[in-house]
Length: 254
Image (tube, rainbow, N blue to C red; front, top):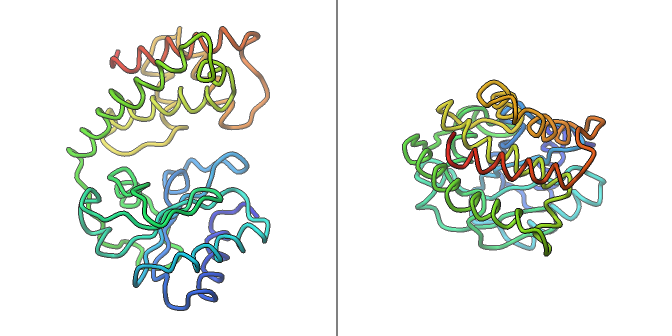
């Protein structure tokens, strides 16, 4: 099973059995909400809205049984309240969060403006009102995005550029290429578009926005994300070098 809606419905069946009345709303976010879900390559991101703080043991049982039933891909996301969605996520307390097999009782993961804006733009309601009250603030999101480029993505690029060590070696792998090339580009595209955009849309945008010298590495990132045959490079070292040069260009906003 890899259909996002069907996964969401199965999750609700399990949630209603293990914790009746707990989950009042279930929304699919991420690539599903942005129209960029790639079967076999994308995870399914969710936001579960609960009537009360959930019991962590029940959450563990629900997600363990979901995996036991052979659900793929991962079903990842936070548990929040309706009140949380209606206010600045920076003011929301941490809470339960699921990432693969890891379930944390108190985490801030996905409780941020990107998630809230994505839900507002195109969140898919599996349960609950189609358009719940969701807080958004574009100016804050734009500032958050710029800061993400200056901090996380600058550090990520610097580590990946190291010729030796684990970070440099990981930079040779396919997943690292698509994460870096499309991840940073997505932030630039979001700022240009004035809304949260997907990795696939960002890659297509880059092919029109940036010089032709960068097109091969962008197409390589898109190829990997889509699971298409390739690669477009004979040398992984040349590919990593192009990725680093491309990211440095993106980070300065050229």
